[in-house]
Amino acid sequence: MKEQEFIQIIKSTLNSKYIGDDCAYLKDLNILVSQDSLVEDVHFKKDLITPYQLGYKTVMVNISDICASGAKPLYLTISLSLPSDTNSNFIRNFYNGAKDAALGVEIVGGDITGSDKIYISATAIGSSKGRKISSRSHAKPGYKIIVSGEHGSSAYGLELLLKGNPEFTKNNIENKFIKSHLMPEAQIEFSRNISENIQSDYAMMDTSDGLADALFQIAKSSNVNLDIDTTKIPHDSRVDMQTVLYGGEDYQLVAAVPESVLQKISGYTIIGDVKEGPFSVNFDGKTFTQIDDKLFNHFKE
Image (cartoon, rainbow, N blue to C red; front, side, top):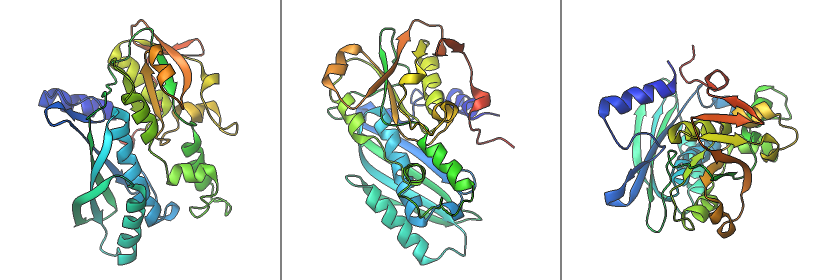
């Protein structure tokens, strides 16, 4: 079974209006809440990441979801499930990495339990005050598709790490691709720039599961067609287009916004247009209505 099928079952079982975006927007409290997990041998391998980098990445992964909503990240809790042979240096270095990543965000608690592998679960809380909050269902015909940063760098960094070349190790964060994978940066300013300067409804997601996945999620939730020019997508020339589109964990942002807001913001690249539905995504004129076979599946045997 695919992840989206699980989510749909949960949503229909709970009959919850909050499930659908990466964050639950609790409008009566002016807060947004998100939870994300990192699991050893699913999301990371111990020999390819240091405890410091793992703590750093844990924070950035969770802050990114808050940024994708347009909210201001404020608080974080982190729960760790750890094997019995874990030593104090792991804890110290993990939380040093988390603390360095959490500038402006306060880590306020969590939990520690025993486990056979390392399991990390974090909850992030953001504020909607002074911000217009996004939803993946708010893309409208006539809007422009914009992105932050370069795409495909994290997946390419993972590819380098997995090759086993002594040149490409977890300690070589001078390599831009390895650093992109091990120590990503949540797009806090890009998010703030949009949410503080927009009045209309808009759609925004991070690219944690890949740029193509985010585009499909927005198109499907909004029942629109997204027309994408892949030559406009910012990426390093060493990274192929398959990796740019389908490689995950860049933690960049993609948004569908009215053209009128573009003169008020900066730091974006236009990669396409929102057109009338039904739901589909065009890449360079070729139409797709599903890409599941190209995406990472947590539940694949």
